[in-house]
Length: 439
Image (cartoon, rainbow, N blue to C red; front, side, top):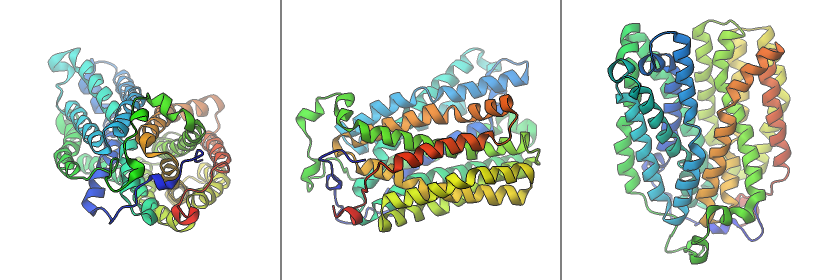
């Protein structure tokens, strides 16, 4: 996947590992993204009732979900703007800006008065804050992934890079726990009137601490002891499009692979709805599947990073993905024919394990395969487009496929198709792990 002339030597070899609290500060924003994502999904019914005109509850829910989807629109813009900023002035400033904007968006959603208090201004403000969040989240992944890879010792880049994915699933677990805790301790009326806002405020609380820690981070882009990262005046004057043009093959491969893993993750997220609506399982079992799959991924994603450092990026992404390709349809067939908590949790947990092992090396390999001066912007843009197009549409596509075909295996067919594309692209990738390349 590496373009001619680009080597992992462009990534600085850190003199020593960055402290653990610095790693935490870097991945905090990425985790906050998924915390916000799941909180909005969990409390969508209450958000719809708070911000939209009273009347048909289903219409309010649809408007709430549509507003959630609006956040995907500005992600690519944020990826281009903030990611490119990370290449021009440094990873650290870009990470500070994205984190601050993210916190502002969450605070706005939590504190904006409802429709009953300020009328039509309520949904307008909600849309505005969701657009801010989408912009910030679009620009978060590129600078942070570049930073982790650049700050890590060469033999530990896979492990450091895998923290991005682990932080996402940790946040999903926390958001699920917050939802369960609030539903168990607050009455329905309390939850509807004000309780749901505290889930967002809980996320906002960590923002100042995250900003303080991020301000203390050393910069990795213009490291004085690494000539490969010295600013290139000519390159700096080019637009992002001009800078990434020589690496289109790399980026197309990265986009297709990230699209495949995005679809897989969003199918797993959809399993709670699928279990309720199509398998007719109790709500407690249905909602528990998200926590099971997230827990499995949190455990095995760092292991994937370590394995990719030892055996290389390519084998660690390929073998689990090939096994997943062969397992998706049989797993869904068993779940649809023998729906139960044991069958659902064990089979979805197994697929989540394979996804957790195969996913982290993808974004690590993409990041390693790009030169430092376009790394942040290119990774941010590709990731944001993958999430916006495929993450924003997967659950709608699955629901539509089930309704028009009547086939309960529709999610499996869609996931299998994405997985097949991913496997095909993986065969085009050269190895990028320093232990295997000698660079």
